Image (cartoon, rainbow, N blue to C red; front, side, top):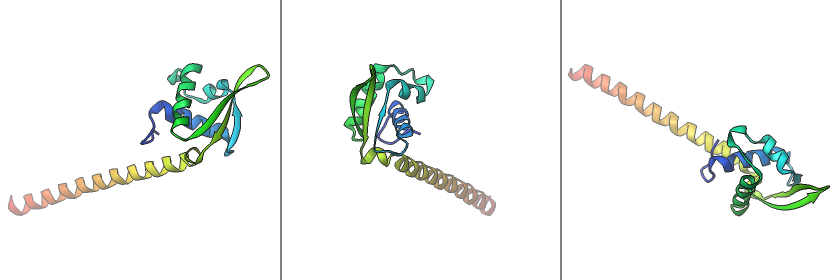
Length: 123
């Protein structure tokens, strides 16, 4: 689901990072592991993944440093408070959206019934 602050690509990367973190605050992950978890329709390459991760780091979701592990490029990711609470905030946003839709639907039903009632009285 798309967050209020993040675009679709950023949400996909944030979901992948959160999934790979396993609830840990600090962890290692390779770009290959990240792209394997990301949806195929996004067509992520290493450069676009890194741009998106830089954007998320600037927004305060996590900090990351590039490292080299046995000749393989690796990211050392340190989740910040916004990153650790990402799932909870996304759940709250979805719940608020469902509530607003339910209120709008209930308002439409009440308006329809009042219209029928007025038509029956005056029609």
